[in-house]
Length: 292
Image 1 (spheres, rainbow, N blue to C red):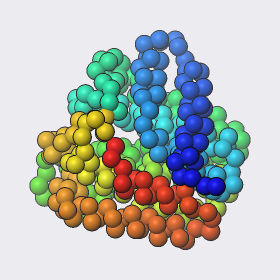
Image 2: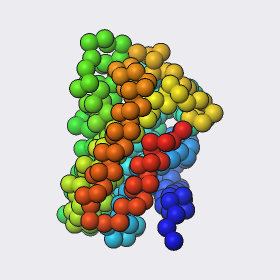
Image 3: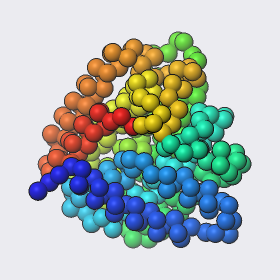
C-alpha cells in the first residue's frame, strides 16, 4: 500500500547510497578540497530535487539507474550554489542545515574552490552519460542550461541586483523565483521526461514551474515565521539585507494566500498528466506545509 513518508524515504535512501559512492570516487589530489566538497554535499537536507527526479522517473516507468547520475549531478550543482550563496559577498550566512557554512570551516578561498569543483564534477557526470545516446545529451544540456546564465545564475544575479531597491514590481519577483529557484526544480522533472522519450514533458515542465514558485514562496515566508532550530540557517536575513521577497511585496498574510493559490496551481498541473501522480500531489502539500 502506498505511503508518502515511506516512499519519500525509499527515494531518499536510494539517492544517498548513490551520492556516497560518487563522493568516495571524487579525486583526492587535494585532500582539503575533497573534504570541503564532501562536507557540504553530505550535510543532508530534504534532497527535494533528486527525490523529484526519482519520483518522476518511477511514475514514467524509467529505471532509477537511468536518472541517478543526473540526480547526483543536480545535487552537486545545488550544493555548489549554496556554498557560494553563503559567502560574505552573497548572502553572508554562517550556517547551513544547522552546521557552520563551508567558508566558516574551510575559509573563503577553499569554499569558492569547493563550489567550483562540484560544478565541474557535475558536468563530468553529464558528459559521461552523453556517450549513451541522443536523449542523454539532451538531458545533460537541459541541466547545464538550467544551472547557467539562462537559468539559476541569472536568478541569483537578479536577487543580488534587486536587494535594497524600492521601485520593484511583481515581475521582478517572479523572475527571481522562476530562475533562481524554479529552474533547478523544473530540471529533474524535465530530465526524467526526456529519458522516458519525452512522455508528459510539457505537463511536467508546467508543474515544475509552479512547484518552484511554491518552494520559494514558502522559503520567503519561513524566513519570517521560522526558527533556526528547524530551518538550520539564520532567519530574518532577507529583511536585514533588503531582499526582494513575497513578504516584502505582498505582506505576510497575502504571501500566505499566494502560496495557497500556487499550491492549487501545482495540483491542477498534475491533473493534466496521464500517470499516477499521488506522490507528486503529496509532495506539493509537503512543500506548502514545511517548517524547514
